[in-house]
Image 1 (tube, rainbow, N blue to C red):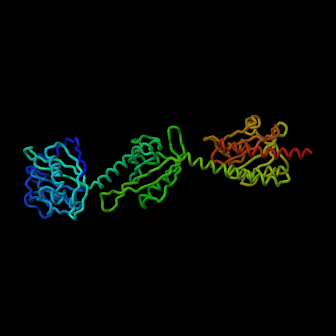
Image 2 (cartoon, rainbow, N blue to C red):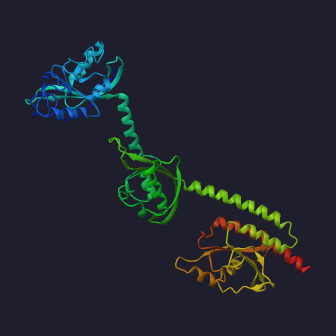
Image 3 (cartoon, rainbow, N blue to C red):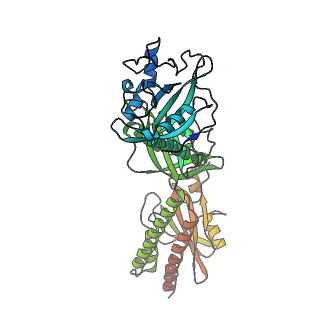
Length: 472
């Protein structure tokens, strides 16, 4: 026998104007049971009442003031196995739906609701028709007649495990939509957000209510096509078998920022229809940008270390030091830049000594016919690198025409990003190394500068050796 508890609810249950004093549509006197639904008598509207009672998801029974069963719906029959014809007209549950040892206590608890305000909640162990026991949770409330006097009790009950499952489902959904440590967004069939939890609102850069109903394209600058394609696929085919990693660019008050979201999707369907009717998609995601960037950086570092190792082995086999220098640059270019230029100091100016082709990808080669002066104007990045004895990074501005910007600096026309690293050996500045990237690639960053300086140190050693050798 489970413990009982009472709620403090004070809502009035049951219409006062009902002349029968029982649940809506019947009198306190059960009368002869109806054949179809176990409803006493056949007053006007009894067919409607029978349909309403039998259509309920919860099991329902009712008692008159004397404790006689007056109503018994189909869900009650499903839970306990007793039909309406077998249940209606019995006095209490004693001897058929509850053990005789428990019958008095169960009856007292149920009928106490007739005089108590609001609803009362209890848990009872009831008997099935097949003799098995089932623990149910009941909500019972008194029914009053037209004169306002207690006239009976109605009782809705369900199996405890089913109630607990429902409560867990509700608790889970509330927790996900409030306190989850990952983003939860519910989108409708038009792919507009209908519910956004706190994590998702922060990730999308807006308030929880401000994001509702807005097209995803207003929130995501780049990557929205992939996201919407995934949502459409879930609506049509169902949830994918594994999470997907989506790179998106968001529009925020601080500007655009690129993020990586590990996302899972669930198709939502109505549980109230025979055929699954799509309600939308549940989108769960977590920001894994930091981890992905760390992985990419580790992969890039491993690749560059491997390239430097291969370059050193190749350069060690070159008899000509300048050939060793250009071999080093060929390995360094892979995945790093599109062009490289080698300008060496000759008196007060720089002369072009080696370069990759301007018009197409190719290896770094010495300038045929000997070095030629580099016609750099004042303030040129290569000249600034020599003056500072350091690295200079620069890119074409957002409003600049990339071709004009590159042509003014005597660089290949497709160049949009540059990194100039000084060549130093034995405390002397030998020249400058310029790496160039096209506009379809990202600008050079600080880790790129460190790598370029490592390459420049090795190239400077080869150039220094070449000059010493030529002097002897």
